[in-house]
Length: 140
Image 1 (tube, rainbow, N blue to C red):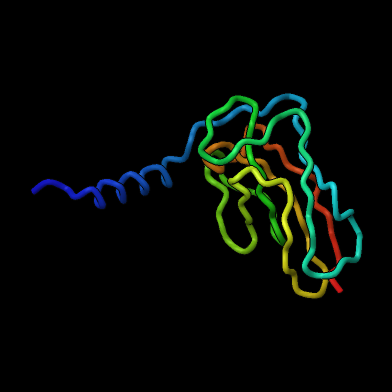
Image 2 (cartoon, rainbow, N blue to C red):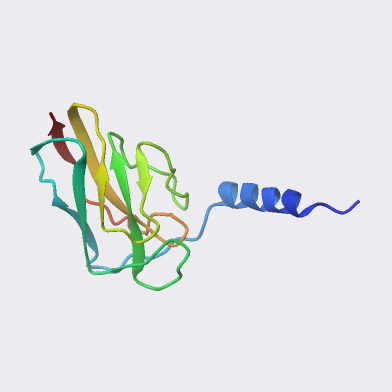
């Protein structure tokens, strides 16, 4: 009996999630940062968050172009990921794989930490990682 297309796709997905991806080198001078809000700022929800990137270009997920990547916003979490692993996609790890450079985000009242991390075409952080400083904002 031959395996179905769904079975082959599932096996492929499992293989790549376990195996990880090869490292994508980061340009030497690359830096990602928040244009707004500023560290320590008090804001209202929804919060408009603008991303800045220096020394590399923005390209959507799936586009293989040297010296590019796309933004990921980490909310109330830390960065550590095993090398070669894709950034998770959940409420604490927001993906902007379309190449977006800003978002409006509903956040509960209180203090929140935000950090930007650039991922390659597979949502895997570059080596070395291109990440912003972690900022703290207060939502009223």
